Length: 308
Image (tube, rainbow, N blue to C red; front, side, top):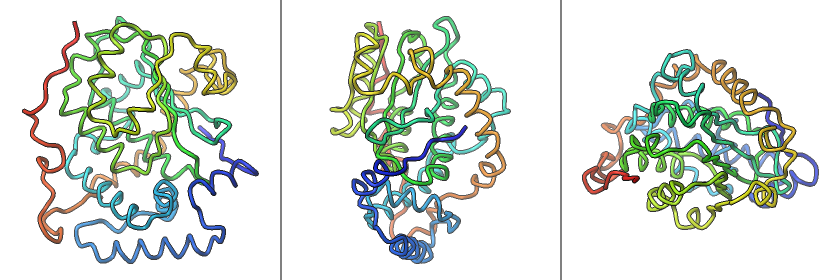
């Protein structure tokens, strides 16, 4: 799956928004500073490649301190939530099942303001509840691939969630603790600039789910959730042409796009396996180690999601 990268005036606009230095040598200097910092962190791996470091810099608007915080959390979460970062192989039966029943492809095109659009939809309301951990794992796998393949930098991410097949049964296994761990990973460990979330094909269950998730989201993200009663309303934010064919667009079907990303994930199988050892070593962290309680809070303080 090829991701169209911004160019020309759009690229220049994005670079200005991300505060990217005009001189490439300044970016290389920043990469060198981050590498020197990593070399002095006994608890962190030293294997981050330049392409991913550039993505971290862009996602943090070239704030070196913010990059350091994100990188620390990136490796810390791999140690704290191993269920998200081990056995990342799309040929495994559990992962294959998830990718069969949930489509989650980033779309190849870009919005007029330079954002990447990610679709998320179930394929059948009558299917059994997918493995929640495997679903979250697949999402983070795509995130890791994009760290390397967003070679120029985008203005941010736009998520389109199709709730047409969502049922109470599907969400029964979404525990507050699991949702919190996943959202901390996304918000604190990856250089993602979430610009908008759009929910389409809504039903009464949607309000319950959104209200359940909101407490785990940063305030500015909560304010960017849009609920649409019809698909035409979505077109005001995401051009119709760049959407999958199921939504009137020209990007191909969701299945074709999802299968292309499945193949891309398969190409990274060896890298994912190597990365299982690439995580924070809390026994070597200067000062106090970061515990699960510190990162996530006590599981018992959360209520189970209840949907009537």
